[in-house]
Image (cartoon, rainbow, N blue to C red; front, top):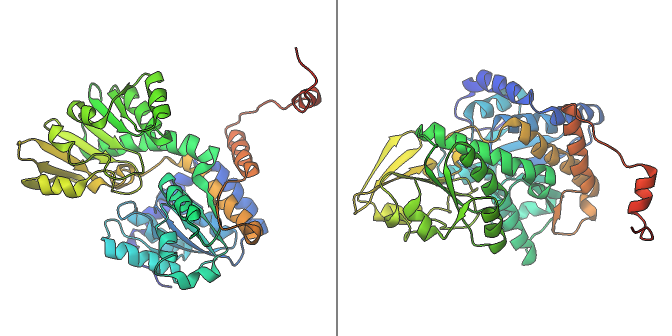
Amino acid sequence: MNYDVKDINLAKKGKLRIEWAEMNMPVLRMVRERFRKEKPIKGIRISACLHVTTETGVLMETLKAGGAEVTLCASNPLSTQDDVAASLVKDQGMPVFSIKGEDKKTYYSHIKSALAVKPQITMDDGADLVSMLHSTEKGLLKNILAGTEETTTGVIRLRAMAERGVLQYPIIAINDAYTKYLFDNRYGTGQSTIDGILRATNRLMSGSVFVVAGYGWCGKGVAMRARGMGANVIVTEINPLRALEATMDGFSVMPMKQAAAAGDIFVTVTGDINVIDKSHFPLMKEGAIVCNSGHFNVEIALNHLSGMAVKKRLMRDFVEEFTLKNHRRIYVLGEGRLINLAAAEGHPSAVMDMSFANQVLSVEYLVKKGRTLKKAVYVVPAEIDKKIAALKLSSMGIKIDKLTAEQKKYLSSWEMGT
């Protein structure tokens, strides 16, 4: 078995940490029990390009229980937990190609290694694996049945491919499931982003001016948690509806050029490039902290910042200092990559439980229905979304009402009024 991990001897630690995450992932455990009995994806080759975390370890074990042959690589150079990668290799016999801090060349060679198994299903987070399949590895497309995509940035890329008519197989947008973005994006990103910033800097949040670029579900979560820590939150947006929503939620809303001069801590969560650009850096306060929680490290114009700096040094793990000509210092966290995974452990297992249950059940659906679907991006089927919500409520001991026959009749009629 081929694999490339940092240190296979980290497996014992990784196994215990995966077990810890699994304790708080009841939905995935319930799905796994059924999969172990039914083997609904037996023999299906899956290439997965995901953040290699403890929660992903639980997902991989669930897919394997269902009979799949899974190969895993990292979807971000800094998002790997090396002990988890080692455990999946040693304890699960799974080919894993993933090392925290790998350079760009190694990152793409790992994706290529994951594709070497000639997958039938792809599981992506950011669409880098799908992009490679449609560029340098086109010969493998003939084997592909369908795929899934985990995150907002990847869905944006895939929809662009579909609109241009270049997408060569159907893909389900896991990110668009209610049980994913309402919880994972909002509560997961919110908590883990703050966690990453605090671990990297150990700075006091209370009383700081905290700028959130983007008020999608991830931005809402970050803004909510920053305010909960006592920060004064500013939101920047390009969408008038989201800007209005942020205003009605009680946040200050302004352009980035205005926010740049006011902020102490900046977080980008937009999915777009150069949200914090070269015109913004000279306006920032001495000691401003800049980081990103969007998928790729393009949201902060790091090349411009580097060119503007007269001095650079690494202050502590994941904290790089850039001194500008005006003598002000700006601190970039985690190389501008996902701060919640670069400096922390990513989302809590309780929310990834739902996100990864969507992944598993969508793969099962695609194995059954994939050949009948067009080459397009699909939302998670409503029945899967509702089933996951019901399982989550059940695991929490929460019961809800059911419609009576009279109520069902009323909702399906038009005759009854006041």
